[in-house]
Image 1 (cartoon, rainbow, N blue to C red):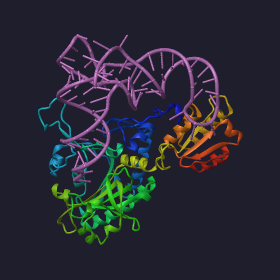
Image 2 (image 1 turned 60 degrees about the vertical axis):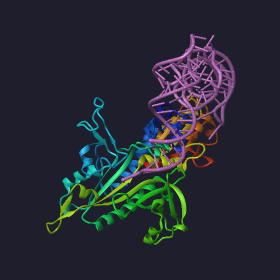
Image 3 (image 1 turned 180 degrees about the vertical axis):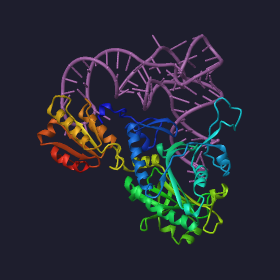
Length: 425
RNA sequence: CGGGGUGUAGCGCAGUCUGGUAGCGCAUUGCGUUCGGAGCGCAAAGGUCGAUUGUUCGAAUCAAUCCACCCCGACCA
């Protein structure tokens, strides 16, 4: 895409109502726009990143599950049935604009904060027999949670993107088999996104659902809200909430030997056991014709939060730094000549066209602004590879290529550059 | 939900204490100059001073109420 046609522009100054690094940089670079506290628009550049993150998640989930899309709205009855209408304090309900007298009305709905209560009746209609089990489905969707205090930019919003997967099993053993396999699937996601090395499988409390532990995936960053005890040798961590003497014995670990580090929860997996199947009376028919209770698990990843975590971890004082796998563009082509008829300008346009023909996602800075402004913007946007073509670079024999994370650049010929992208044909 | 802070041009701010014609920088528009790290000069355009009510001859400025946003804490299936 030509940068002169890009919807957004960069800004030099940070917005006054943001403090977090992720919100400041993403706003300055034109990736997001704040609508209100905890609610953001994904501008074209931000949407490109979000889509790539979601596509990576989708790719890995498709190896074990089926994608569907549930509604964001659900009837109040769905939550009354599980007893959660009044117990989830972040639950948001719609109130008819023309009827403020009623707390509850036939026009009142829940803005779903999660979907156990919605998916379970759907699967109950489909999977009635042991022959249908196990089964799992997932979606990537916008969730609503009325956080008491939205903060940390896109790390904790009132409206955010979430991948949520739900699995259904004939017994606990089968549930745990699937549950354990999901740990590997999740690790693959975080590796592909580029934060695998600093993302720890973390033992956490099972919440209200079970007496068992659940697991979170925690990425080390100062911007995180959680404190975890990290066992780097065994590549596992423990959420502070489970750190006590009783659990030390139960798990056979010594918390005192571990390093305490701040981290951000980018994913979690829960053995729900029979919490929802019991409440919603979901049983299946086993081999002997007997009715048996269903065992469930739920598995979440927050794509929008992941985007924020990547910014917090990888960006530098000059701006954003995107891993190649989720960068909005893979290559930033910059021409420094303002004369459209110059050799450099012609070569730049020709190179841009060729790269596009080869399927390279290239952002072409064709704007008539100073070199300094183009370089500063390029650093701020954080595209992994920068290619500069100018009269000077042509004199030296080609184009100047530089990685966003490197201080060094080198001159290569246009043929050499194109050869790199040949395999994409 | 408790404590603290901030609302003035699209963005970032000064002016408020001590009431008296609305200012600066960035961005925008035009002209000139420059052309490898946000360069320079001249000019122009842009404002219900968060909202409401009150005090006053006169309110961005004083008072009351409300709203929004940020930070700390509590909370975070």
